[in-house]
Length: 272
Image (cartoon, rainbow, N blue to C red; front, side, top):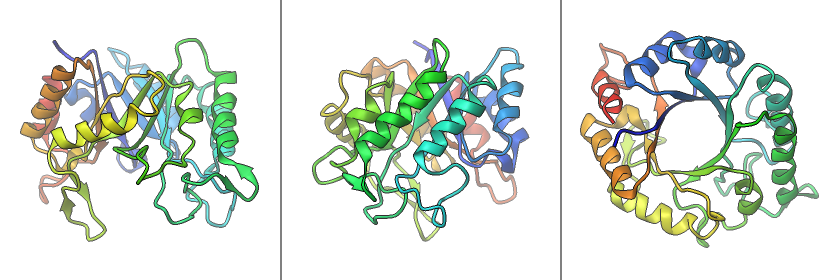
């Protein structure tokens, strides 16, 4: 059965909006998920809504857990500021959904959510209030989701992250079951072996905290994947009875360097 929803994610939308638009069309994706540091996100909402067929627009961000403005990683970075931006700027512009991405590099940096509190603020309260701010302005049918590392809820990973508060309002959970990532050396790495291994670990980890919500694995990083990898991902979703696919993240195709999300990968996504 064809996927009922296909979501193409993007980190650096502003670098090449036209390329992203063409990749959305070529892949047959009906939903996009754009990182909120984009200066063009509000205009992107209007543009994608105006296409035929209409494209649903979600936004996402790894928000900050520490209010330090000096170390902030981009605009409206601290979680309350991000929530205000979504509620006051993006929802009135027509945003259809939001996926929060709380993570931890175990380094006590401003984006480290694997802590009980930061500077006297309980992170469970910060997570709860984050969603409350957005929910207060969200229209009926607005999509709430969460993504994070593929096995982060495990005791040996990020057990202090406020899972219940972040997952509570969500319609679905999106573990980052990427079989390849770009390492710090700029080269592709396969941190979790096979797709089956990544997905099995993700389900085991997230079932502990999922509150009964659907768990939907993500494919990535798709600029490092082949068409065969995409077909294997689709087959895995079908075997699990899942009808929603997520593809992280779009990178413009460079025909000279032969890098980016290839036409073959986009064509494979369209056939799912």
